[in-house]
Amino acid sequence: DGSDLTYFAAVKFGDDATEFYLLADTAATNTWVMGASCSTAACEKHSTLGSGSSSLDEKSGTFSIAYGSGQVNGTLAEDDVQIAGFTVSMTFGLAGYASSDFESFPIDGVMGLGRADMTSQSVTEGTILDALAKASLIPAKVFGMHLSRNEDAQDGEINFGAPNPSRYDGDLAWTSAMDNDRGFWEIPIDDAAVDGSSTGLSDRTAIIDSGTSYILIPADDAAALHKLVPSASKNGEVYTVPCDTTQNLQLTFSNVAYDISYRDWVGGTVGDGTCQSNIIARQTFGAKQWLVGDVFLKNVYAVFDQDNVRVGF
Image (cartoon, rainbow, N blue to C red):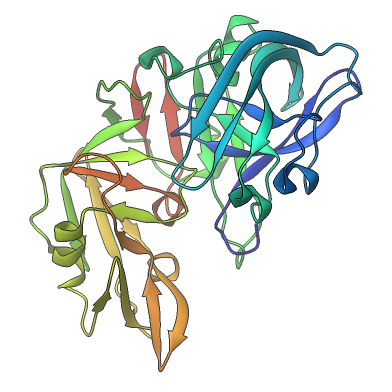
C-alpha cells in the first residue's frame, strides 16, 4: 500500500477467477480468504469467496488464527488458485469471522509463505509454495522477494521456483535457518549497529517477516540501539528521533552487514522536528528473538530456500 505498511499479491480463486489481495506473509503458514458467509464489518468491506465458484469444496475442518493485530476463524475449503501464471488446487481457510482490525487493512486474506513442514499450527495442507512444487510447476521450493518503496519504483515482486537475478547485484549470501515449532524463517544475527558502531547485541535471532511493517525487538535491545542515535527519546514502546537523522542501521548475517536506510527506519513526523523510529520496543516472542519486517526487507533482495533450509540476501 502507499505507506509501505502492507505488501500483497493479487491471487485468483475458483472457476469464476475472483481476485483477492493477499498479504504476502513469510511468518505465516496458513493461507485464507474471507468467505461469503462472513457478516462482520471487515468482510463487508472486502472481496469474499462463496457460491460464485462452482468448484469450491468446503470441508468439515475448522481453523482459528490470532495475529498480533486481528483474529479470524472459519472452515477449510479447497479450490483452484491462480497466481504467477500458474493454476493449482490447494486447501485454504475460508473465514466466517474476521475481527474489526481487518476493516482498515487493504487485504482480503493472507498468503502464508512460512515453513509449514515445521509447525503443528498449520491448518492447511502446506503453503502455496508446497502446492506449486507438488504439482511440478516449479523446479524447487524456493522463492525470491523484492519489496519496493512507495517513493521509488513500485516494482515489488515474488518469484516462485528460483530467485530473479535481475533484481539484485552481486552474489547471494546464505544463512541456515534455525529449527523452531512455529514455521518461522529464523536466522542468527551476528551484530546490530548504527553507522558502523556496534550495539554488542550478537546473541540474537531474526524472524524474517514480510507480514510485519516494522522491526520489533525487546525493550533492552531497543534501548541499546537507540542509545547510538543522537537525541533519541523513548515514549512507551516507541522512540522518536530527529526527522533529519541520516544514520543508517546495520544488521549482520553470516558476516555480511546490510544497511537499513534512514528512509525506512525513520518514520512519520510526530511534530517539533521529531519523527517516530520504526524500530519498536516490543517483545513479540522470546527474549532474544527479533521480528524483522519490511523496514529491513526493503533494503535487500531476500530468497527463502525451503529445500536447503536457508535464507539468502
